[in-house]
Length: 102
Image: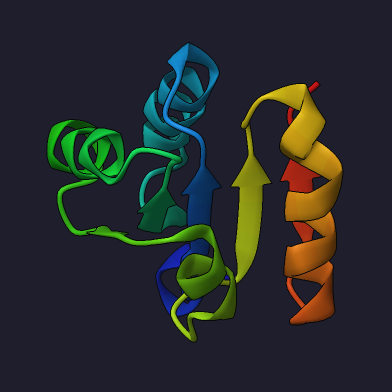
């Protein structure tokens, strides 16, 4: 099967700390099979900086907007542990699969 025919998996990143940075940098090893389309953070400026530095094609948005976005296939959650459950449930409620960093 030709990998060029497969559309990349589009991620929203919740949280802009070191773990999220490592995830996005590691994603680059997938040769375009995965891309970041949204970045969300408690602090919108952090989301904008993260997107500018690591995912220039990504839009910085709120958690709610990123979860509901049609250009998101799944959500990577690396927010503070107390927010893991509410963020995961938010994503699940709109039909998005989640990967929760632990």
